[in-house]
Length: 395
Length: 127
Image 1 (cartoon, rainbow over the protein chains, first blue to last red):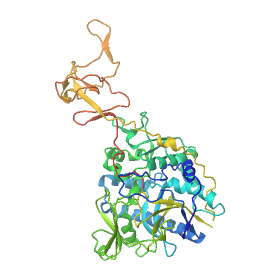
Image 2: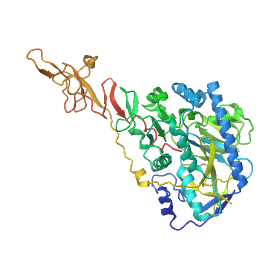
Image 3: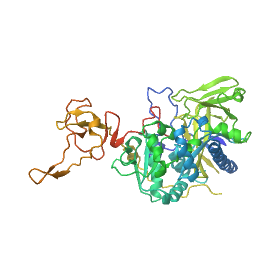
């Protein structure tokens, strides 16, 4: 794994916009705490891998997927929901979904890797991962222009279409794609909807707040009062359950298809990490991790502390040798976990002499198959909402 | 093992993605009223048969049929409040399709929207 300085393509902004990535450069909002020093889509550099590294990362993701499913089974068997702060009202739906395996589509492992040693799992975004269009389409177009004779770990697009074709017989149509109004979510939804369209599935798109609940008919309805039988929601289960329609969603869970299914709450929770460590102690793909308050957590001198359900690097604190070296604010509170610091993944910044860039590798799962990678990069050790996306290739 | 995509064809229309807009409706008021459209206690409308827009019954006195309208009935939407004795107007005797209603006791009728999607002011629903 090497970080290679690149000359951005002429008119790269138009090229990525043509692919659909309209938020390639963050708005310089005066209200932002920290102004990013480069665009979100950053092709002033790229990561070059050896084919053997790609093989190793792919195998690691498959191994991690098996381990995570074992951990989910363990949580269900031992009923460790309270440790994950999962409400008791959701348990019957989770257990039913776990046993019946309703359609699930995708997820993303966030991995620390620096080109040597074993990759380490940071977390599993198994419910609502984004940065998908960039990984599946935009970096592919970049590769075709910039490194046409090389390869890229990326068959995400075909795998998504194939998965929709697999799902098709088991769900009612149309498939509704629901999310929030911000550009990133809308674009992710539009892209996923496009892959479903290419699988010849009828689709609709709407906002989460446009979903209607009809108490008399005991069903969710679209803006035209049609029953919604299948909903892909880019909106996390833990938030849905806190909202007014959370209970109706649980009450009618068996009568419709939510994608991702509710059992993904077991994986998209930082509490998965200490449970994995407990089940697979000293596994080379894992970092030592404990629930906060566990005496073993106190023995860690270099660690990351993060809430069970924080997102986009919010409310994360990094401590090295007993000293806090980075901390992000945010809206998340509640129980936390403590995870040992990963071996540092740092590369020199080609644009700022003396500065460093911190990459995190996102390994994309479509169903049970790892089929691609997208790399987010920051100027500090916490990957956040504005961290850049940097393309990769291997030759 | 070959990993590259064979055909990345994403005819994505960014403008279409951006064009989503909210048609969210808040629930409107549902009150029990008398024949003068004055608000009465909800208990007086309990167990009444629903009123349809063209429901009719035979006129026992002079033959023919007249519209059916019970003494107390629900009134949906429009102006006015929940306070007993006040007058309401501008609404309807039956729930309108696509509208949601809520009584003074929090009981809902019809379709209610806006029950999902208010959880994040910080960023979006993805990560």
